[in-house]
Image (tube, rainbow over all chains, first blue to last red; front, side, top):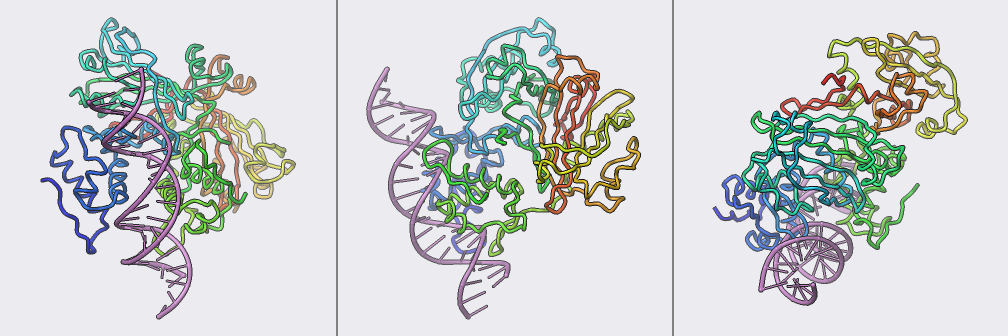
Length: 253
Length: 253
DNA sequence: ACGTATTTGTTCGTATGTATT
DNA sequence: CAATACATACGAACAAATACG
């Protein structure tokens, strides 16, 4: 089912028709290789302006179906997990919505043993785990340190990935590994360890958030993750004017 | 604070600068009559294209701060108190749901001057305020220190209330005083001051949550509140299995 | 390793449709 | 009905990041 032609007369806006048709094609598996058409291809095949294309694609992106970034072609999110908006972890996205771009820098990538992670993953202490530790940057400044432990059986293919602009779950799905679809998380205020504090560029007397997160897929734990978030520069802010939505925001004031 | 001029060079996209400035003006109460500038007025006053204006306003709209529809002018969302159950502050109730009983102990009740509270309440620094400081106990153990500042004009009748088993908002309503129906709150990790730390029975190296909260009624601030929550014994926990509910829970495990 | 082509992001301009006042 | 205001839609150009030869 390649592409439906759009009705120019009246029923729905063009962007809505385009969005609907793209949703249909996603469901039909038209892009199951993960390759989504480029903006230009869409303008050609549907005979609409790029503006209209972007309007439709933006909505698909916002719904968590796509991954878009400059230069890189648009990718399908083969898994539909990122939109668990309830989760505190997803609040990182709200930083990006302020126009600040996030990147990461790999601190550590290798095979380790970790008692705490093993406990949460439900394996013995001496089980080999993949550790991916990243420094998350927002607008070039340190925002958080993110450490993810995964069972090696699942995660071996991840050892050779460039993580600076790659999302963990997208890559997991890409390798055919199980992606978390349930779990829990908890938030604690802490004094960061000296090494972490230095890496985040924090002063000694400042506290931080510790966000711990267990991800399970169909009941079996697949990921234990801890995130140390700068508390001197970022806060969880919640407006209860309208939506009551929470955001992670830089402390401008 | 009319309108900041935007920096055309490079730090952030124009739409992000515009969004940030509009958020600031909303917070400052520039549009508290509910009247938001039209797209055209914004293009003029900020000297950007309508496309850029729409990009910024769309995000504010999506965040639930605005109400937009064709022909009708853009309105500020001044209501929406119903969903305030999302608020972090209300998570205190979840402690009680574990069977632990909450009480409070009045630490201070009187008339004070406070620069920070005055700032948030929008009055001059030397304005007399009512301060109600309470130690919140859960099952007989310290959980948090709660300080609420209210304009004396509103709060005078509260001076003679027994607070150990009384909720603040219920008593406000009882006296015919305005009860907050809008506002915002933010969560920061901190190192508690020594006095607070001792009162909460915390060790020196432990961090705490600082929950700050501004309550307004019909646009005018009526309450500034800070709550210091023990971080060594209580955490925000969120299950993203089914309910996605967040709770404040003792760190039993 | 470097330069070029590609792709998405940002920003401008303009015009028309449609609902509200 | 007329004016206003937001929604939709076209076109064009440059910037920034990436991918590829």
